[in-house]
Every structure is written in structure tokens, then in C-alpha cells.
Image (cartoon, rainbow, N blue to C red; front, side, top):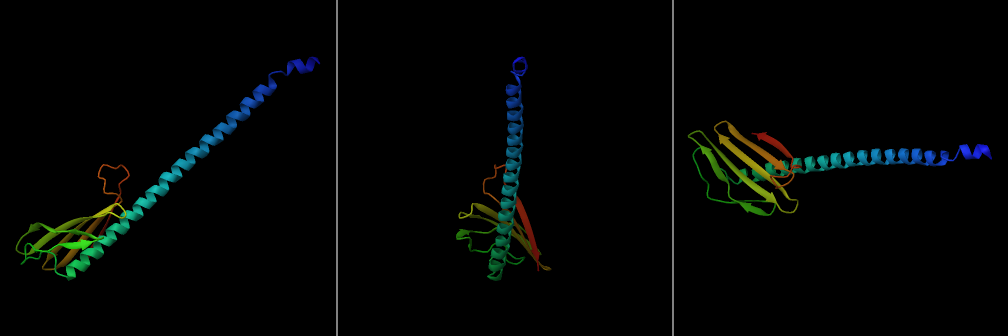
Length: 152
């Protein structure tokens, strides 16, 4: 009976240690899960921005075939273009005797992504640069940009 009185706090100490270990494991698992969610979100946004940039290239290639962009001899074409179901008018940002640079921006309202496309035409060929954004919100800390360039 004397031995029982000496072990009174042993159960409480064991319970506290087990609770601490379980709590520590729970916090570690929560930390890993949070990081994995952020990483997968980054990957999704990166892919979205990349595909948006690719769509911007395809749109510019189609409308370049339709002669919708400024050349050295034609400084301001009078037409609008349509991509992602949205319409915009390209604007000439620079032009001289041998080259012209036109750009347009389109928002894809279905996916809430944006693309900024710049088309430079000169005597040596055409360069299309497309920058896709994972969100149209410029203030978003999770906004990602991916770019593609085509020369021909």
C-alpha cells in the first residue's frame, strides 16, 4: 500500500507527456499540409499563366495572318481583334520607318486570367511576345507571370 502512495503523480505525468507528443505530431502534420497546399496552388497558378501565354501567342498568330497589326508602312490598323470571347483594339506603342510594335491585352473572364501580347514587325520578320498572368488582380501576392516568345 505504501508503494501505491508514492506513484500518485505518475498517471498525470504520463498523460501530459502523451498529450504533448500527440500535439507536437498534430502541429507538424498541419505545417506539412499547409506547405503542400501552397505548393500545389503555386503549380496550378503557374500552369494557368503558361497556358494563358500560349493562348495569347495563338491569338496573335491568327490575327497576324489576318493582317491586323501595324507594319512599317501601315502605322495604325483600323480594326479590333477577338480572343477568349473578348474584343479589344490593338494599339501601336512605337513605330518608325522600318518597324512597328503593337500590343493588346485581353482578359479571359472564364478563368480570370489575363494576357498582354506585343507584336513587333520589321523588315527581318515578326516577333510575338506573350505574357500570361494567373490572375487579373495586379495587387494579388499570388499572381504569377509566364512568358513566351515566337520569332518568324
